[in-house]
Image (tube, rainbow, N blue to C red; front, side, top):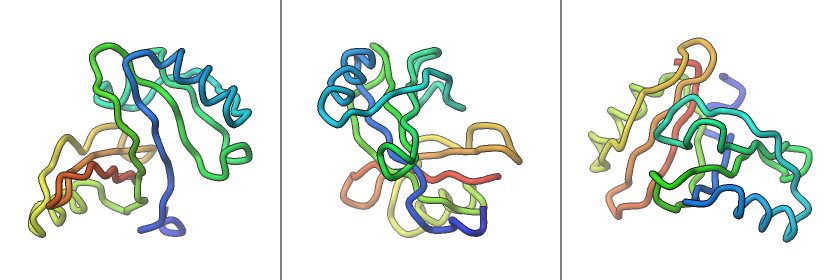
Length: 126
């Protein structure tokens, strides 16, 4: 993932009714979705995540969620080591929300809040 280190690599739109959100953004922007699962239940309930192709939205992204998740919009920054990035975020005054979580070598994710409380994601191979 070195080519995408510290670049925006993914966005998410999460809500309590992901089907309704997918219909909304599909109608609004012409996005189509491929339903699948995320690497973490902290991101979306099983079977409720719809991936938007980068060729459609300009950046890899997805719309998902479920009744157990609060609405949010966030972006992910590509990093080599999610755990190290989360530790550094904490050392700089942020707070870890979750992670690292996922499949090492494939995709690992985590989220933190910055000192102002903004939610940010990090993603990488470990």
